[in-house]
Image (cartoon, rainbow, N blue to C red; front, side):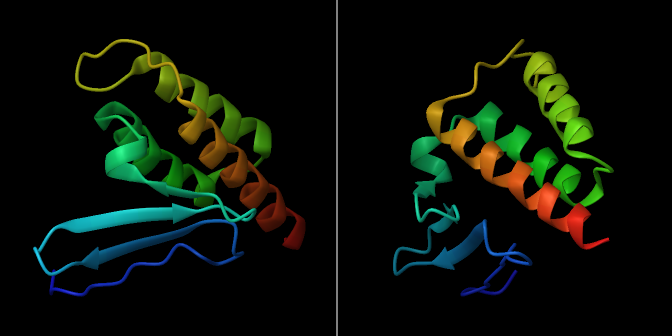
Length: 111
């Protein structure tokens, strides 16, 4: 991946994910919700939550209903990551998931 690479999940504007390269060559992923809350995934989410979020970005695009998205989110939290066991979602992850649910609903409404 070249330095300065920019990735945007913004088809409907509730979530923007940016990967930026700063002067110290550290990559950041900042998520901005529709109500303009900003979350730095390194600072605001645990490693298991970041892994779950990666799965949820996929399910946001593939879910056939908001209910299915919620079920997938619940399963991911129950399963955990890398032997971690169940994950209790932090306030940051809850806010991001709520925004993703709205994005699923908006996508489905368009079809």
